[in-house]
Amino acid sequence: MHYDDRVRDKVRTLYAADTQSVAHRMDHIERVLKNIRKIAAHFPDADPELLTLAALLHDVTSPFNRKEEHVELSMETARNILKEIGYPPERMERVIAIIAEHSTEHLVVGNLLSVEARILFDADKIDGLGPNGIARAFALFGQRGYAPPSAITWYRKKIETTLRNMKTDPGRKMAMERLPYGEDFLHRFEAENAGLAERAERDHSSGTT
Ligand SMILES: [Fe+2]
Ligand SMILES: [Fe+2]
Image 1 (cartoon, rainbow, N blue to C red):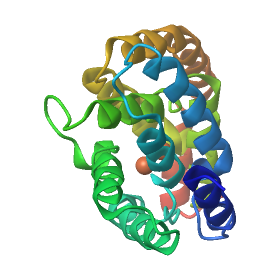
Image 2: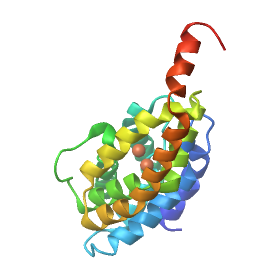
Image 3: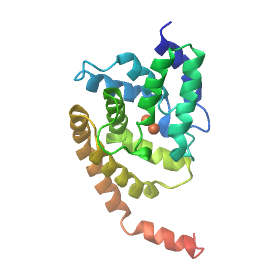
């Protein structure tokens, strides 16, 4: 069995755990892998095995209420899994380094260390845009106990951060293609909720329901 099949076997149950963010389950990983294949086609020097392993492991421990810690937590789990399957230590360190740079929680200004890190970063951020990005934002806020409109300010900020930080040209192109749909959705959503969020807030703080 190849290393990626063995890792896939091990992570499947972890991504399905009750504590795991619903926005960071196996479906997210499969879409990130799909985005990686498209972007990596432009980078023949990128190592496909390192990319696949990093993608499979990058969010492996993402508790829904501890998002800021998910990079460190996932790196630790990744290290344990790669050791368990006997992955060569020097390649393991490269996988861990790619995971370390994947998130806007720890934004690296400028270029990331490796071409694989740049590809995973973009492939991951693209899944935050378009219909899946929208669905994931609402799902995560729901899991944390918030109503849909509460996600909007956070989600708009996330889109801005994504667009400012894309690391590859093909990744940026894919992100831009997804943008109009998301913008249209947000405009309509905000229009239908205009004024209501403040009112809900006021009613809530004054004790009315
Ligand atoms: Fe992540
Ligand atoms: Fe991710």
